[in-house]
Length: 466
Image (tube, rainbow, N blue to C red; front, top):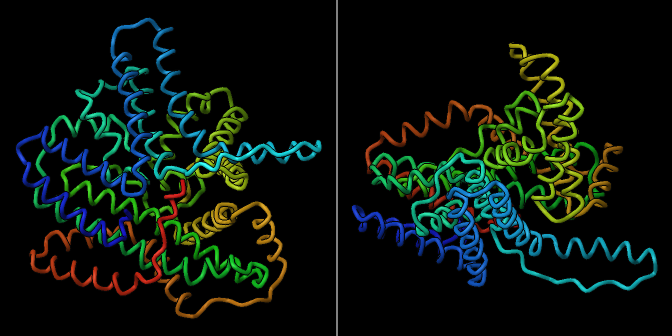
């Protein structure tokens, strides 16, 4: 059930109505939202519910015992059980065939026959809820949070439908206290949530799907036909496609949760307005980058031990972050490539201090940072390493087609809107929230009508594959 589908347009009002009718009955509300979340997740494949129930059960069991006064050795065993269960589940479904395929290539060098692949279906959202449940057991192990008050609370934390499939990755410390209070949504919550949903749909359907269908997909269908300028422009389009797709999903998730009275963390803060790669990563997929920092980079040692160890830890973190995005070597190369660029950016920031003020300096920094991101994005979009090298090989030519003029005008407009977003977005939100209900209703009908007219070429959310 995609956020951009007619089915979800029927599902969400039904959930909002059911939640409204159960106001004043916290346990009934939680039960209803949990059932709705399972219906939402099961709509892809009901078998996936067994996996999320397994992950929920293991971490509820482990969390309950970590909350007790137990010897350190036993606590470490409990944490190891959670890590093995969750990462094992993720490893089997996401990485099994990739590992077997890589092993078969090595065996072929020795003239040995291939091992059969498992051909497992990747459960949608498994990368997200796995990290989410792990944050609960790790934080309990570190004694930084209190355990969930009930299995119902914990199960809803794991399966809450707005962010279940593609984030933001919500931590127990952020969500469980909201379940304990279970406050009633206010009219302002409904208005702000609706604005976020509409803004997210615009980013997804108008920006991401248009750029994907009209520019990125045609480019990757015939990479060799394009020269340097066409290739660079295609990856400009792709940068905004993947941003519009994922930032749009995050906004819809935040908006749906807000209408139900819950606050989810902001996941994007105009990343392409960043003046360095380190800053861009602090603004991009914030819930993942902070998760990797707190649960991987810092436990590895962080910046302790000098710049070389910091560089090693950062590169390893980004390498594993690349593999988190997909079971393929080109994702691993993308993560490592990004890690190397990020190390250089971090060393430069440490040596030179914060960026110096000035419009021209800022424009130069934003331009260079964005094009470094575009350069690494070739590995993220390419279906394999061979295609990435083919893309780079076309950069020696100046011939080849470009894109339709209206697409270039749209790209420039989206660029301008993105740079203005930190001020423009709050201003538009306030105007929408303060408008009379009749005006908001008219805007809703108008936007949904326009989106329905455009949606003929709608594409699945990119991050569903992760």
